[in-house]
Length: 270
Image 1: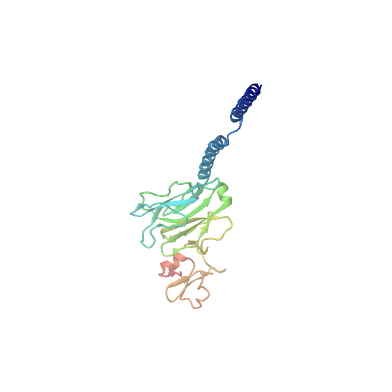
Image 2: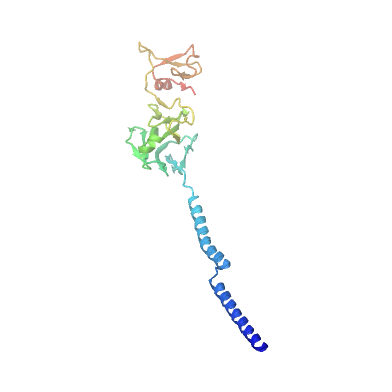
């Protein structure tokens, strides 16, 4: 009898063990694996992180800034290297004339361009040129005497273009802007250098805006036609409203035009 009871109990225990093991196997197969999940997440996240980094690197690339570029054709030296944003093109102090010029915008912030017109020895004012075209003459040995520059399109509304020239005898003149004449006419003086600069609309000029243009044949006379240009004892002449005009109280001579004063052996005041 005891043997029978023991046999029944052993069989029962074996059945429980089998069920327990089966449940454990099923449980092990159906339970989510922490390591597998983390690996899967890692595989998904990693490509996203790399893609994100690539996107950031691409967007951090900065566009080249806007520039006004210009080059001049100089006597006996040919075309000079391109310069930009207020740097000098030409050869100041070497007594060489500028004969032609090219001006252009690179990477403009708005739609539009740049156009310019030159005054050439014995030819006067030439037609307008734009965006890198040649203004002036080549192979004719003729000097530039004056220039006008202006912007076009949307650029004209957002920016001012300033420019100044270095003229024979007068040296650096004031900053002209937006189509004003810069340089001289009537004297036969050559342009020797030029600087061009873009300034946001309404901002200050790069320097003085006085004495930007001189017409040698302009008449300075009173109501009776008497000349108002004063020639001093040291052979310097002064035009009305210039710095030392009022201080020159005992002029040695009076002239109606600047060209007349120069022909008489007087030189302009600086």
